Amino acid sequence: MSKENRETAISRAVDLLKGKSKFAQSLNKISLIKVTPQGVDYWLEKGAVVPKFAPYIERVTAEQGERIRMEDLCPDMPWDLVAELLADKTRLDV
Image 1 (cartoon, rainbow, N blue to C red):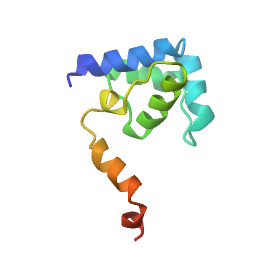
Image 2: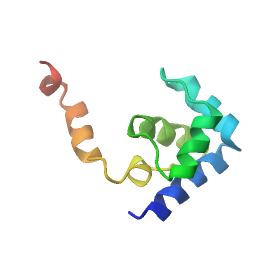
Image 3: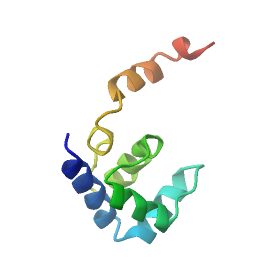
């Protein structure tokens, strides 16, 4: 996916949550790692989201009626492998 498409996914997510402040507040309700409006602004400028936030973004956007997928936010991340590892928790026991 091109940087332009990632930027579109991030922008859609922020718009759906009605701005950077409300977007950050929504993420902070479910994430242990806090996000600031300035952090959201940085993501918008860079056209990239830190992958650890992508599942949270997918969740809060789905709750608003339009699911912005992790794969669209961070297409370089091997989400299929992540899902497989999470589904098979015995493989995570080290």
